Image (cartoon, rainbow, N blue to C red; front, side, top):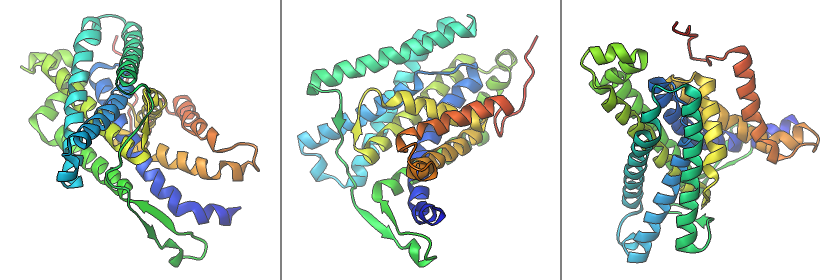
Length: 328
């Protein structure tokens, strides 16, 4: 059994890193909004899903107009990412203005219910539009880079098997790392980032220090939503099929990643996403083997939520979070 696990380990690590990178970037949106407003934006998973549909729609537009054949694949990829990020960033700001801003002084439970309601509204709007345009809400995406190569990890040890590495997997990891490093630099090294951290620490005091809290909140929603939209494009390119419901479970797992790393902690969300992705792929590959066939790969989702329960019981502030006393 151990030999079989080791044989599949290189492929598990590659696929897990790709999936974990997606979780990590989506988790950043959750943790940014929570850090500023102490609000769990459960509509964030649907913003990710919207990004996948916007990116796929732009790709179909490029194909139908003949532009796709006249430009390099990487140029199309960058344009699609930019458009999806712009659309979802504006969508996130619109959601904040309409559904969250009027409820800032309301009990947190009211804001939470509003977030859940917005997620269903966005989900059904995207479903309606996709069915109206294509007659089906399940869309198969065009893959810009579908080549793959074999990594000879078996040469390192006879216990290890070779792994297949897709070009899209490399792109996902590279873009996700770029986005995460860029966000980390923005938060910790720029004037706007300092303002965001100040608002997250104490909104009232920050406003007395000439920081425009409303602008910071808008910026937070725009950046977090834009990152979610970009990740949706990466997801569509990697897995090829999207539907209006992909944001629900993936959003919950990304939220789990944010909680694991420490909700409100940027670097913790990155770490949590990678851990959840690798563990999920390990479970998908080996769960049947470990349980003697009692549980198949379809039970891989249990891993993420078991982690969430364990973290909430033993370390509710997360691995990198700090316990904070409630203000009286």
